[in-house]
Length: 232
Image (cartoon, rainbow, N blue to C red; front, side, top):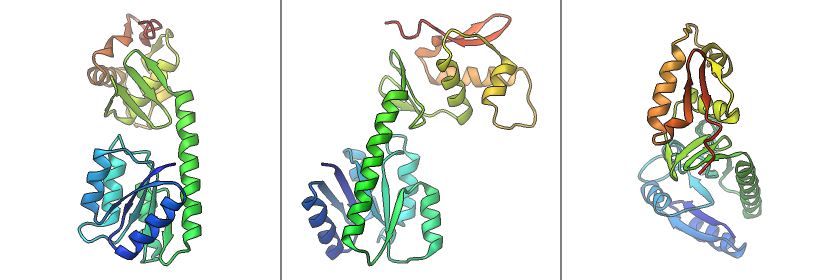
């Protein structure tokens, strides 16, 4: 059984979706507009969202953008439901991070099949994430969801900071010089100096306190991730 949120303003469609999803064994919550939908997402956990693009208070695309910008919701499967059938809306929605879409009118069996596929894929990705995630005391690095937790709270890292932390943690105990690190985590910057990495390390350490001690300075060389980080 999965917990599914329907963000849809048409009462008849709300009833149709709720009935068939509950018949499939899912627990269903319905929100009639985008604001209520975001409120439901923030107050309890869901396994999937069915999101109508034409909502009375705000565009469904805006709701999708807000969901994807929230670290706690970034991997939540979102299936868009649209009556427009315009390719531009679908392209924008998928670009914002929606996982799939169906166009009204749709066959309920097709929608249920898409829901099943997305739930299965989400479970597989979650299992893969558990295998690949790294934990060092209260510091968790999740490369599948591309997030870092400090004592169970998500923190915001830049792409370079995340790549730096993930690379060092993946090679705990190994010291790398500045240019060696830049070669491995570089993002294509045209101008690179041997001090660029120092700025990233300084910012990273500030964000991952109190576990900043895990990123060690090796005098005369560069940096390494402490091989003792996993010890309690």
